[in-house]
Image (cartoon, rainbow, N blue to C red; front, top):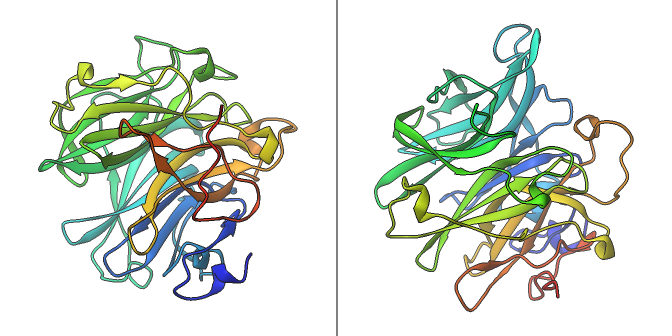
Length: 332
């Protein structure tokens, strides 16, 4: 950890920000704090921490706000918690399965009405029901032009693998209407190890709605794709979305960063620099099943914008202090 990353008021940090925390979600609230949720390697709990800087998250006190049940629908594979603040309350969307059927993954929600979510009770709001029952995970939510949306990952009978779906929300804990499929694994880089599109995250800038998603197995093949829609388009029309032909963020052997993905977005405290937060490992070879490996770590780095208004994430930066004035080198 760099000294500057521990200084209050200094926006600097070092990577990895938090070791052994996958699927990181960083939300900067109006109270000036960055809130971090992520998947713990034991897959058994939801943690929450906050700090005034991204670097401060490395040493911030960690509060376990919820633990898995012994049995039932929330008793195994506690994955990808995301904290959101909606209409004056805090919500955490997360994935869970059950001990007697560990791949019966479904979406669930916690709610907190307190001002400080680290010092109050979180209430289970139960399963977030989507249009059909199947392998379901990785929910995120965003608001655009007065409508709140839920994006998530799910299997269906139409195509192989996992896909990203979108629906409108009528409350923070329910969707309304029919879901649409935004993307499925079509390219070779989305089908390495497993056929995967998962972990959506939304960024609205420059008259566009961007949705990143992660593809392929959770080893060094893991990478990030991009969907783009015009900000004034009908987001519930699949034709409104354009899919990148190549990954927009992938492993960097040169920098010893492998399998970047399942990202979120935030900014520096002054709001002037956009930041991608993601997980990755600093080595390529994994013994055994990647999901059993604990070393996906939370990282963050600034990114820039192309002349056409699309994000340019560059390459994952190597371990160590992150230069805020030098975003990741653009791949040739």
